[in-house]
Image (cartoon, rainbow, N blue to C red; front, side, top):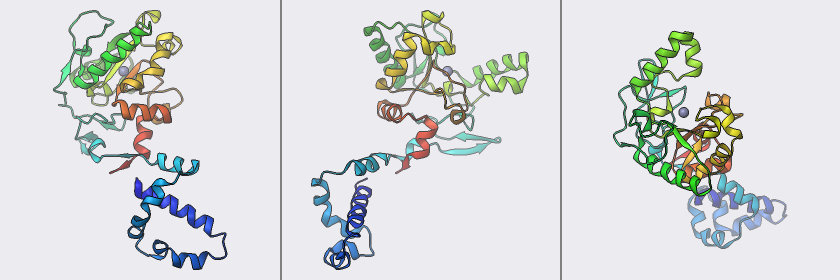
Length: 279
Ligand SMILES: [Zn+2]
């Protein structure tokens, strides 16, 4: 980051100076500007750069350079014709219509978050989430309560086997091809990560419907979920990017830092991985 920032700074000096007749002679007086080794000479000038107030333009460029450690990127291998994620425990796993989870993958740290569920106290698979996500979901629900927002968790973890059942049930009604447009093909559901939760409210009878966006609960969630590490995974207007219809009820845990960044820059997870630089 620093190196790139300094490069921007140097380029801007060069641009300013290029308007000056004495540019060439000045270049010879500034040690780092006539070196072919781009990295080395900058070091001596770091202090000057750091003490200088960067211009708005420079700040914009610098903040646009997003980096992320390699471990948070999907590691993909083709298995039975499917691009399959090899590091499914990754909290930033990008699961979509392109990348699937391994059939046998089930997170080992599933817990039942202490939040109200649409189905009450039933201890069933879909009430579970991975521990870190569950803890943050509890914080999200507590904050909602404080703001007089009553929300209910509807559906969290979904095993591969359950996806097979759900898909088969749908396919028997409408055929496989049509089923694939409304239900995830087994292995391709983000719910298998244990990091997603569908949320609803009494105002729409605890259903998962687009109308949730108009409720005060849906609006509050869209505005606040990121503070607790959750993103609205399938936003309106980005259907072509996510491959999914708008789902104002589906929230995915990615951690507070990334959620905040995605919220502020209005990015989907797909867009985030398109612009972030692997380090
Ligand atoms: Zn969902």
